[in-house]
Image 1: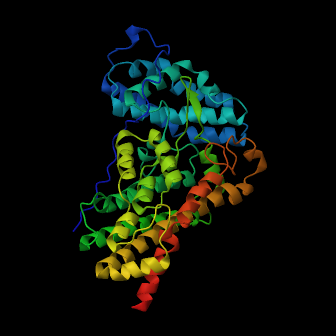
Image 2: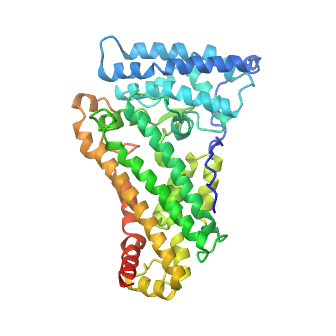
Image 3: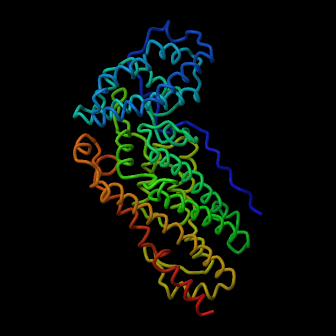
Length: 441
């Protein structure tokens, strides 16, 4: 029986970030090697995290314009807790390793990204809040160098490494915590699905081996579990009446994930689509066309070494669609999709092995396509239709408007990529061919 694939994802290196702080002013050499005990660094981290537990209250005060809160209060509170005079000696002590540097980046990211959200919401240029704290900016650059990671928060620090029953958040809302849970379940379950299909793709497991059908079924089961998680987005919280995540929750959260420059280089914020498991499943199924693969290649720069290596390998492997066509002996010209009739004829001629594989693969495609449709439905709900329910006065202070993508651009490109899955022959033809064969039998 195939064992459960390993799902631990601990590497923190980012592939394309190298020495972002070259030439940037650094503290005096004497400050670079101060003997800071590990317990002192841990104490500073705990104190910073304790402050960040109160940060959602401060953020909410600025967002809603509560009389007792103001941007200046938030700035003073943040400045007091990320004072470079306190964290600088630790950062430059020589005792901060890659793991500790990444933890610091994640924590500092909550504070800096909060300031940037409110500054940009008030019409100030990206990076203006951080520019007012040059000592903090230098610390971010040094931590990024040590961690081999962008000098700010990312989908690793915000979601994957912030994975607990009570994660740190910007807003404190249940919806933001549920989104964290869903991203981590996506990483786990889609990662499992891709791993179950890997031996078939690399040729270590023949599709004629009965184990292959079991692996395809396990992959489909993982995606089915994730689809149930996605369905929970709009279901009421237990004992309550509101959805687990409302359009207001979603749009408040995403406005803390803005791009801003650090050390003169623009860095994008955390983006769940950069989770490696997403493209790995698309590549395994086989519905990623050239345009989709180009988009996947662009996302590699936001992945750590381990994840980028997995996706690069997967980009070069045959998909299950190709393996199935080989099994049933169906050849088509490049760019020409097989028809329903061709699939029926060749699956029938391939015997019981071909039928079993085609049936299992068809179920996998149905589950993955249903998940994709649900994903787009959520995007539409939270950013297009539900976005209209956000109070105008609050929407006016959101740098990212509800109807836009992560970068503030149109959602058309996202829709086109997702629609490409729906138009693929594995969705339009294969299930019908399998159903007709089953009915004929």
